[in-house]
Image (cartoon, rainbow, N blue to C red; front, side, top):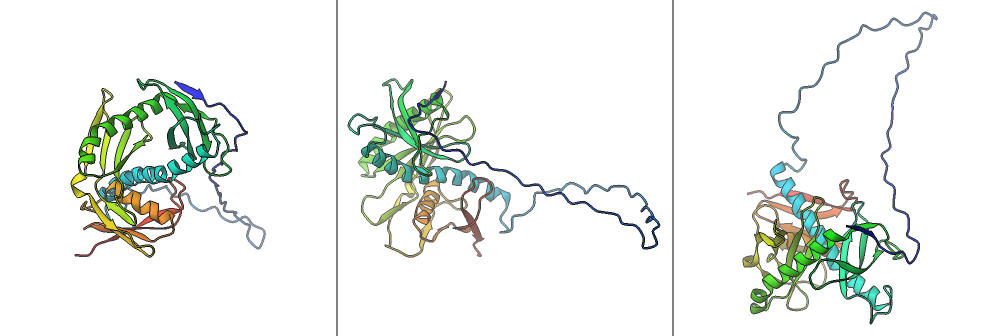
Length: 304
């Protein structure tokens, strides 16, 4: 079911992205004496043979690394955005953006549109998790105008239920270990749904390396385990300033939580490097053509 969120104020226009196409033409001139230049002999077009293997990335790392890394980083971007979005929405709710704070819905939703527009808001859901109610959304990329584009609330309901089920599933074991966590829903570009258990530090000026757990929504709607890194949970001291290096427990592609931590602290102005036995990855200024983000990963293979 697709519904339109009620509009309270005028929505801002979406950015229009375009591709500029440049055409070049060759002009054939006449000879100095006025006689037309002789036409060149026609030459058959020779097609280049197809590549037998994909081009090697400039960093020398194979596609077997870049593709899984990109998949993990998409999830990390969602987690990092969620970490920034939820306190922002909570503050907006307290300020009355969604009506009187005492009566505004308590549940928070954070997502990005297919165009990359950051959106956050509040909602209610019935006890059986069959329908989203009182959904109010705002754009988070400017003056906080209301977001009124159509939204697949049925998929959002399934995502909310998956996050609730995952939280109930892992809570007993994590509480026994005194390990706080957050469950971050993730809606990939395809029709699948995921929920990621992201560990939180137990004390100030600390961060957690590793320890994340990923679940997908199974065919019957129940959580299906994708990856479990709880055994790698490590709490480390966080310096007040300066570069940060995160040592990921994974041999090749760093854990989703480690990439999310790197993105979070990079957004705060720190230089962050994620290290595995295979590669060191650092976020540097640049344009990501796939997402429009202003940060890109620079990979440096580790020499053994």
